[in-house]
Amino acid sequence: MNKVDIVICTKNRPKLLSRLINQVKLFSYNQLIIIDSSDTPFKFKNHITKQITYIYNPKLKLGNARQIGLKKCSSKYVFFVDDKVILSSNCVSILYAFLENSEDINILAVSGKMIIGYNDSILNKLFSCSKPFLEGENGGFVLLKRKEILEIGGFNKKIHYGEDVELHQRLSVNGKKWVLIPEATASYKISFKEILDTMKRHGYGCREASIIGNNMLKMVIKIIGRIFIMPLYYGFKTKDFRVFGYYSLMNLYLLFGFCRG
Image (cartoon, rainbow, N blue to C red; front, side, top):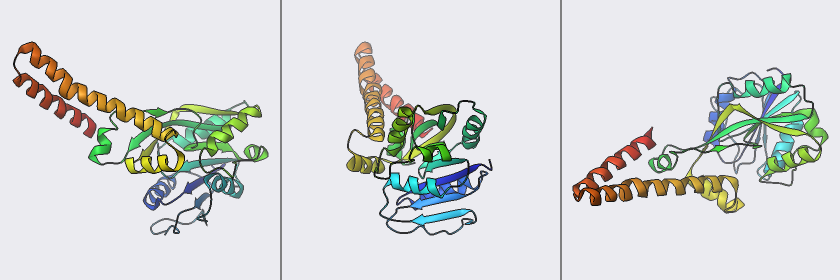
């Protein structure tokens, strides 16, 4: 994939950025560009800094950061990936192969399926039993045709959140396409604290908050049903409330065992 530059926009997530840098080093690319709007600059330790362009500006909005990264690139394609994303091993190559071989000149962007995940705490595992998919035109990881995207103005540098949605809308207005390739997958690792921070910054109707909130509600209903309602039903049916305790403990074990898996 010698026609691809990779751009990472990051803010106050040095551990996740370090993880992502180590991951993309395994891919083939021309250059890696990091746009950092954190409160303090990132410290490169065990990273190979060759082919890395690092730009630090704590005042950048996300749309502006992406636009700067796009303009710094020189390859035919630009792969944008968020610092919280864990890519599958063949994710980039699948998107690259699709764009490179597509005969539809109106396709300017391709992205894949995003799996919402959580960090490794017990509470987060409990509410991640049913991991939903984010399907559609999301900018968590997306491969773009650099020249053509710049020709329609690139990213809106005034937008801090939803710059990917705005770009998709502008592509549609101009008769261009942003295509979903379901075979290309990635995980989007978040925690409850990050959900709350996102909700504070962008409102309770933001995409991540609504998906996670819906997932949590389903899990609460499932817990109440399996630990209380179903055992209570069998307790009344058998007229032996030892059955209630047995079923409650059994379902509690199975539920948390499933969450750990």
